[in-house]
Length: 237
Image (cartoon, rainbow, N blue to C red; front, side, top):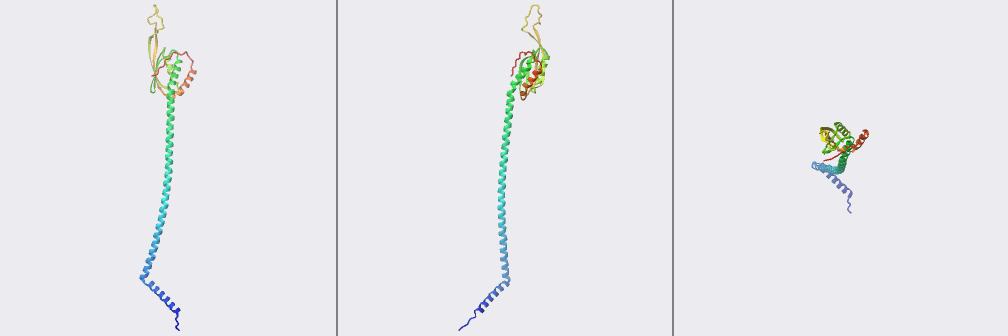
């Protein structure tokens, strides 16, 4: 019978394999190849991590940029809405001013007639021939028995709460024929002639002051003694 020692055979084979590996590792070329492979794997790992981290940072930056754009769009919408509101407020203010101006202009002519008529009635013998308006200027023409009454009428116009201002008075004395005087044979040729003072009053007119003109005129009228009203003719061109 044949006897085979398997244990020794396996040991010998394993020993031969270990020796072969040791020989390969001890070879400089093999060592260089192992180091190259290790360096290549390490470099690939570093590059891979850098690519992954860069991609994550880029994604985060892109998300932040989108968020900033969204906030900027919302802020721009708020700014545009604020501008629209400011424009609407300006339009409303302009309309209010236009309404106030229109009301002042509408109240102006009636206030002028009321103020002039009331003041002319306070001066006995004063006769207004015309009242002319040219823009912001007013011209009063008429006549009176003497200059003192014209001066009194001009002073009453000054107390109009700013409705009339910067007055200038021009007067000229003339003689006119009084048609109501009956001439007699013994009468003097000048018996039917009357001396009167023709006047022209120029002043600035402020329509915005028309609201307080009537109130101020009423105060002036109550403060001065009332006289019989003289016939007044008012014409506006």
